[in-house]
Every structure is written in structure tokens, then in C-alpha cells.
Amino acid sequence: MKLLTGNSNPALAQAIADYLEMPLTKADVRRFADEEVFVEIHENVRGEDMFVIQSTSFPANDNLMELLICIDALRRASATRITAVLPYFGYARQDRKPGPRTPISAKLVANLITTAGADRVLAVDLHAGQIQGFFDIPTDNLYAAPVMSADILSRSGGENLMVVSPDVGGVVRARALARRLGNAPLSIVDKRRDKPGQSEVQNIIGDVKGWDCILIDDIIDSGGTLCNAAQALMDAGAKSVTAYLTHGVLSGAAIDRVNMSALKELVITDTIQPTDGAQASGKIRVLSIAPLVGEAIRRIADESSVSSLFD
Ligand code: R5P
Image (cartoon, rainbow, N blue to C red; front, side, top):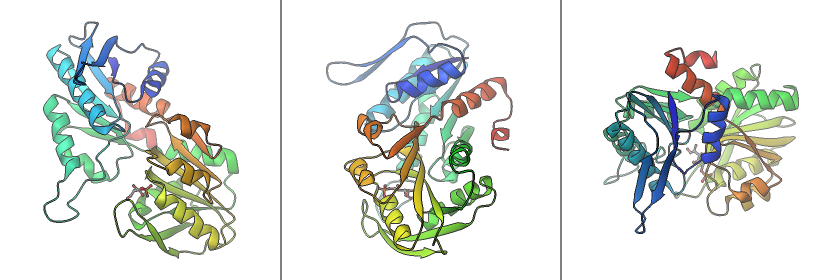
């Protein structure tokens, strides 16, 4: 088995390689003068079980093309099996038609990855579980919840915790985390979004007064959902609000918004390489997902159980 990476998150790829105690495959993933992507693999991969580690995060289209072209290069170099490792699957939020004459881009991207030559997919916290069904190849969806719950318990001892979903769509994820925290109580923020990119808190389902609230979600993008939810929880009497998010997209003014928010802390994982701004923020902390992804890669290569990672 061998690991190959594009340019989207070299730090995570190296951390996964370190966990597996193996080097990354020597390759160049670079641009021609006109910005076309070019990939050249500098070692033999014939007959290898290849894992291509590439988040399709910002710049999403460039990183997606790198992934597709890496897969094509491996296929033409006679790799036996190619697994697309997508710590962050960009386009996942476009998983249904929000209106007439709109695309389902998550399905299109799944088709592109399969057509390029991927035999399997390994993703982390897909925006919706059913996106696995967009791929007609085996797809493993890892959960960051065990990494988060270990961190929460080591910091708080599990006392006075209430898990909060920032919207109705995230309740299943929140319930799973609550179970890992010894069946912590659960509340829900009923959010209504009038326009894309804007969010508005409407109502809190549950009594959060006096609790240390743990907000959990898959993605922080503009930060609107999370910061509004944090403010609503504090206004409703929460003692503190800490947020755990798998994918720190953090576009535009999101970091400033987090820095000025009612949040005590925002904890993200490194599925997307944290920007300098995120690293410099006193409110943002990063947990590494590398051991989880590395262990899943090892198990796929060994043909052993991946789901038992979450028992
Ligand atoms: C929505 O369904 C997602 O789970 C996130 O809540 C959303 O993508 C966050 O976006 P933003 O940070 O821009 O509010």
C-alpha cells in the first residue's frame, strides 16, 4: 500500500503518513503556466493499493481537479486499487435540488471521482450520510465524534454538559455525541435561513439555563449558524458555549466573527488545513484527525473492519 497527496492539505497527509510509519509517494502535483494541473509520480506504483489524500476544500475546483488527475495518473500507472481519501468532501452541501433548474453537484462530483478511476472512497463526516449512496463504489464515512468526545471529557470531566444541535438537521449527529458523553441531555436550536449565507436563530428547544453547552456541527463556513446559536444559548441562560466542528471551512469574515462571538472556544479538526488566521486566533483550537484516518486506511488495506473503530 502507498499514500499519495495533492496540495490541499499536505500537513494532514504527512501526519497520516507518520501515523502509518511510511513515506508519502514521491510525486509532483503542479501547474503549467496556464494553471492546468499536471501530475507526475516519481516511483513505481504498479500493483499497489493506493490511497490519494485530498480534501476538496478551498480552492475547491482546483483541489478537485488535482484529485481527479492524481487518480487518472495512478490508474494509467497500473495501480491495483485506488481509494480517494476525502477528509473534507467539498460540494457535499449541494446534495439535493433546492429549487427548480438547479443541479445536484454532490452527485456530479461523486460521478467524476468514480469515472476518474477511484475504486473506493474514504470520507470524514459527510454532510449527510446518504451521500454515500451517490457513489456506486464502496464508501466509508468516518465520524470525528470519538476524537471530539475524548477531548471534551479530558477537559471537562463530563460534568454539567448539554449537547446542542445548531439546527434540526444536525440532531442525529448531536445525539450520537451526547451518547458518547454518558447520555448528556440534548437541546436543539431551531434555525431558519432566509437566504444562502445568512442564518437566523428562531427558537431553542430545551432548557439550557446553567448548562455548559457543547454545540456540534459538521461545517463552519461563514460562522453565521454557529455564532448566532451561541448568542441565543447565552441569552437563554447557558453558563458557557463551546463548539466542536469537523470541517473548518471558515470563509470570508468567519474567523473575525468567531473571535467576537459569545463562544468560549471553537474546536475544529484538521480535515481542512487551518489558515494562519485560524491558528492565530486565541478562540480556535485544532484537533488532529490523522490517527483516525490513518487507522481506517490501515484497516482498509488489511481488509479488516472499519466500523469497529466506532464501537
Ligand atoms: C448546514 O446544514 C451545515 O451543517 C452548517 O450548519 C452550515 O454549512 C454552516 O454554515 P455557516 O457557517 O455559513 O452558517
